[in-house]
Length: 73
Image 1 (spheres, one colour):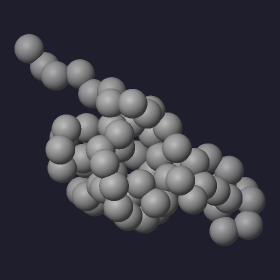
Image 2 (image 1 turned 30 degrees about the vertical axis):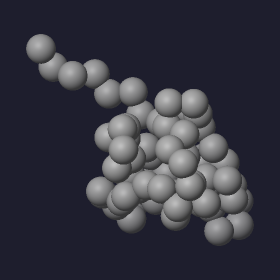
Image 3 (image 1 turned 180 degrees about the horizontal axis):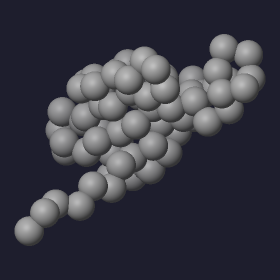
Image 4 (image 1 turned 60 degrees about the vertical axis):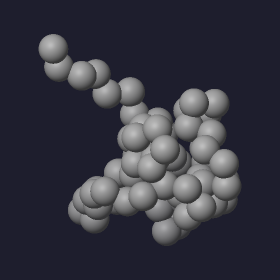
């Protein structure tokens, strides 16, 4: 899969899972709150996978959001 990190800011459901599997690298998991942090190997953009509809069965559909981190300095 080609890098689309500059073109998208959020994906949901199967699109999110496919982009993660085909392109991103996992860098941190917080299993208590079901958050996973990923990084693009091309752009080094950080992404967060969460489950915004937690009360639904199995946590609902996953959401992948681009993080806009500000550098110090």
